[in-house]
Length: 441
Image (cartoon, rainbow, N blue to C red):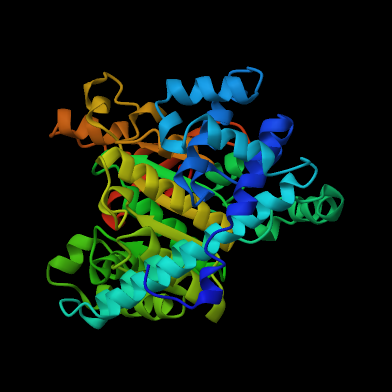
């Protein structure tokens, strides 16, 4: 850490508070769950205290009694007894506190000191970024935003909510259908009731199944209903996505646009473009990390509000930090997207690829276990939709087949607060969009 004032230095750690927490846990094991509800081993500044805390956690988790002798044996087993200064230091810990009554207070002091250290380290890291000559201003701003977001994630308070203060409000929200955002498709809304703020919705499929098309449909349908939408387009350039949106809105065949378009086609394109300009929809193609996305969501939420976020797609993102494996990186991204949905109170629709095992099945019907690279997507998601177009596979197997009905199944493989099931849609190939199965435009 860079040099700071003597007064600030006193806030970096408290030897007395750390010793008091450990002493309370040692003389009264009932204090262990109380302390663990407030702090972790990493919150201690002194390494010896981290080792002692972890040793007592281990004994407690194994349902073993806790005293100075058993603690010594556990530290020997972990090869940390000498690191803490031997049994003499355990005796000092025991002598440091006459009563365990104030363990929560002392744990709070330890937590406060840890937060202050983190804040100082973050400020020092920001200063180093500002002094880095090889970074341009944009890169510096991005890295500082990532650090600032990390600070903001550590919220004040103990995370406890008295239900008497919230039950009535939550019941009212459950009855308020305006809170949920319609997908624009009758079958999907029948199964999930629309997209709910705070939810992470995973839409997954193999390449060419129409993930981006369905996500754009969700975004356009929500925007048409007056909802403010942010669409992170990482696979397609924003111009290409706008072209697709115009063709979808104007019901213009993309092939007609590529050829010599008629006056009627040009008129439709112009009308659709004017319609698109009137929608509250923002496209962003630089949201490659969760922090970049969250920064935009927060700024837009303050400026005009955000009702729906779409991310196309997760496997094109990175965590912004070095990870042990790609699976671990996807786990980090998934968790941050879910936290962003909750923190900003918006539904986040994130697209994901499925692995190749789908192709080897006779029916080609995907399963939730096919989610690519990480089980964290399955765990973090409130809703998982899997797109299946058997019609697509029939076309590949029978290239001369003329009957292309576009039949599509959107499999609701997971719904945390509702049933699973299958929504029947139709893929409108010529417009690169979906429609309700009973309506063929």
